[in-house]
Structure formats: C-alpha cells, structure tokens
Image 1 (spheres, rainbow, N blue to C red):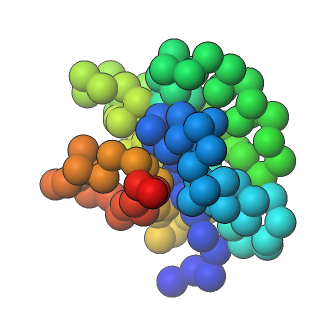
Image 2: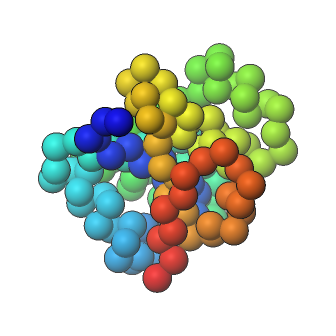
Length: 126
C-alpha cells in the first residue's frame, strides 16, 4: 500500500469548498502544502459543481495542488454507461491505476449516494 493520499472530490465536495466547508478547505491546503497529498477534480463533476455554484470550476482549477481529470476515451466509455455523469466520472477516477495502485478516496458531502458503489468514501459533512 502506498503512503500517498489520493482524493477525488465529487461535485458536492467541490461546491462545499466554495461554501466554506472547513474539511474541504483542509484537504485543499494539504494537497498544496504536503508532499504525497493529491486532489483530483473530474471534469464532469467540475461542470456540475459550477452549475450549482457558478465560479467553482474556475476557482478550483486555479488552485495549486488540484489536478483536473479530463475525459480520455476510457473515462468517456465509463461515463457513457451511467445516467449521472459526475458520479460516474468520480467513480472511474477513484479506481486503481498505475499511478494510483490503491485507487483514490471519494470526498463528498453526500456519502449516502455512494452506498453500494465500489469506492472508499471520505465524508466531509460538517
């Protein structure tokens, strides 16, 4: 198991960061300030977060330590099979890869939506 911490923000976590959620803010700070902490913003979730709270996408994409995950062909194929594109892109992004052999944790303020899904969840509910 790797010592690195890989965290995918879902659209609820992204919106919460813009609303002053302390836990989301701490994650953002750690990804910027500490070695081995990585935050990911899947593009589909970034779009939904920005629709819910305009300006969120531009703000988060500009943060050091935040990596926007674009839709490559494998991501498109995974997302296309689902109705909720933001959740599908987050779930896809959390799966193990060569760069993230242990996968990533999905940070959310709606942990109930992830029940039964094959992801680890970090509840950012205050």
